[in-house]
Image (cartoon, rainbow, N blue to C red; front, side, top):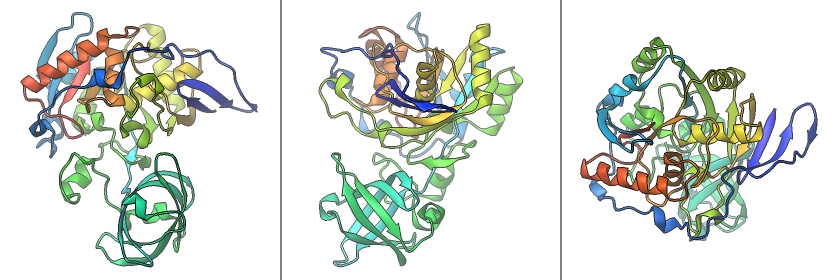
Length: 391
């Protein structure tokens, strides 16, 4: 079954029958007069932005936030095992990051371009961010370089420009660009990681140990802390470990540019939920056990499918641009493991909603208070930073 959710609304559902399905607005689709992007700002000293991963994957710190008591406990990530119970279901996003950052030169002028692939619409047809975009109008031809900076026979032509300034690119001289990315591209490290190029350490550590299907242009970073040994210890506790796939794209990391957050539109991202995961989650909910999501991407996937399926999961794939912000309700996720996110981002809005479901301001206040405590305690922020468990 394939589904598509648009701004939190189910707009289509395909099975053996094809057609449009009418549905009521989801619980989070509320007009929020006065809920502003600036309400989710916080001050972060630049030196707390993690530039390197921890020496060991599970060597990060863990801030544990209890939503009911509003108490904070400072632990190590390896202490996570103490918070599981037999029968819990742990859901992780197994998408693999692709080498999505390419370099090229203008075929006529020799001018240099940096290309960040965002979404494959068809074989050799991609939407991308480009720098400098103003020098790439429709019709511009670019010669791609390989990882050594040498010219290749692969050309790309700008065929369209959307409202966000993203370029649609048609590639030629290659059977399928996706299959050649390993020799052409670099891992798309976020801009706040300040180095010129990826390192050998990045090639290993900016992927989760359980990554499988390739398609993300940013890592599902909450999963970076897990080691195979920790995963085995979690299973030994009687916890069912399951996976969903959400290929992280522009929708996850683009800034919110509107004043009122209810006016922000997420970019759609591809996801898939297997029959095994749907069955395990539904059984856990039925029997009163917890579903613990690892990361905002796993959370968005689970809540997308629940909204399209009367609060339950089913095996499906599709696209979602669901935007979870206060006062969203959550139908599946009972606990959330996540990293510390950028100020005024859709991610910090999601964790604020989760901190106090159904409340307009309580979750934001709780999360900003926890973040202020994390700053005082010198936690490391963002992709390579420390973790936070919200119970």
